[in-house]
Image (cartoon, rainbow, N blue to C red; front, side, top):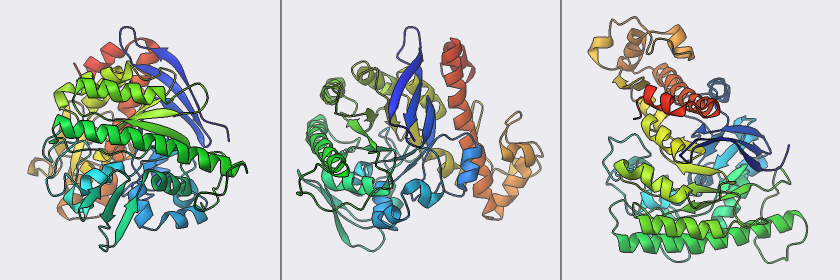
Length: 418
């Protein structure tokens, strides 16, 4: 197992997009790359072997959910996230900041990261997943478990500690993700709080690293021994909503916390966007962030949006959309989506997508998928999720090859992203 590093192998002419190689203790990620979400140490409806067979290079788990169930201590005792879920490749954990938002300002509103209702295919701030309201203050967030109503407390330090227990290769600083309905004044307040929390996350990361090396002063709470002596890479989060001045200010602040020695190992771009302005927001940010550090876009999964994000300098992406949509019978195809529950598919004995190399398309028909969903069979979710994940992973893999071959503009047009 090696240390964390990132190198750029090719760049887009006249744009910020690039193809790179991200080295982690548990393997290499060739970027750009789509990272499936394994919320509770599982990609819903799929085995780790199935996820790997789809070309996934890494998975991302959720700090909030694993903290509540089965508990980060259990994951640590199992040897860390990868061993616990039997995934041998690179792993990531988010910070819990997204849950701060979904438990608080967006509770019951079904708002998406694009500031719209739940018809979006980005991460949705879902009432069902939210639970009780959360209270944000300067020190952290107090919330009630969606499982049993018990009260809990996350601070920047606690988020880092929990993520160390979970044992991912890449972890994220604790941030506040405000509602897309929040005005500019509150967006600034949340951004500045995220910046102060970033400094505290860096300090706690350093303290845990010093402890592993035996040089930390005995001032911090006990952390369960990590499954590896190699510390995870820590990514800082850029906030600022849809406002150009705030996004640039946040990117500049985070970039300043990335000196040659120490600081953040990479960056996450979080918060909410206006869909039509997402490319501009990413360009504002990525023109400022250090070009030699990786950039992860949190919670965006629409094919055209991913291609725009690649063009504007993002390297990795995660989103629940492919599997969430799959479980409800919405399937990606070239040029859009289909609802397999539509009666017109009841006698359609062709694959979901001609030429698709996924297991589902090579072995089953639309009629069979329609039947499974109509009969409410569990296999429906598995076969649909296989197709949707493969579609997105294949799309991003193709974009990477197009960058390396100098043909990205043609690839983008071919795949419906003008």
